[in-house]
Length: 235
Image 1 (tube, one colour):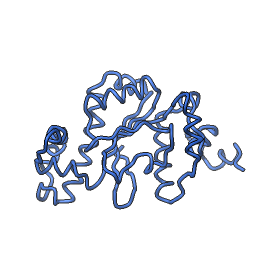
Image 2 (cartoon, one colour; image 1 turned 90 degrees about the horizontal axis):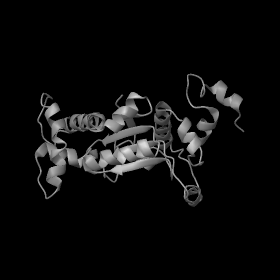
Image 3 (cartoon, rainbow, N blue to C red; image 1 turned 45 degrees about the horizontal axis):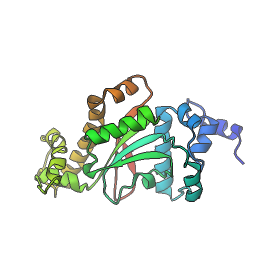
Image 4 (cartoon, one colour; image 1 turned 120 degrees about the vertical axis):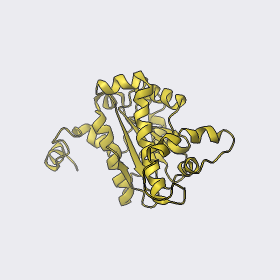
């Protein structure tokens, strides 16, 4: 049985990491509570997601009673983070970060682009609902990024891909052919797209900018590798 002494000696509390109660909650099937969310720092919320990806990669994901969590969260939700991800079927945020019901807000759109609706959703999730972290999660082999590189056009998708074009422009000096068959270029654009989207959240929203300035919120970009499942944070 784990005790406070075990956590102290293992270094989980040292260095201003998770307190005992929050460390236990982050690595268990306990659903987030109002008190735990209020006490959580942005860095702790980030550590939770990093630890979750480690569990995912090692095959040691939590096996929770999801229906029990449904009942436990029926009267309220207190997620620690927002993940803005692509609709790609290989990158489900709850799975790659080993999160459960009530743990995170998840906003998904092709190319993990940031538009007014995504910004508004983040304002709700943070200012009104208390989340401490926003992660813009890009990924390798992104079809939307490839479409933006090649100038694809299709209905309303054309306008969505236009939001990725600034990332293509940022990579204008990259070596090699600037086409979707060049995997290196696609990856560079995907990284730039995630970074720009994260930056645009505070450029677009005074609400989010104020939370960041007050150190109540952290916004980071990250990349998921669809061939390994590993998430790398672009801090």
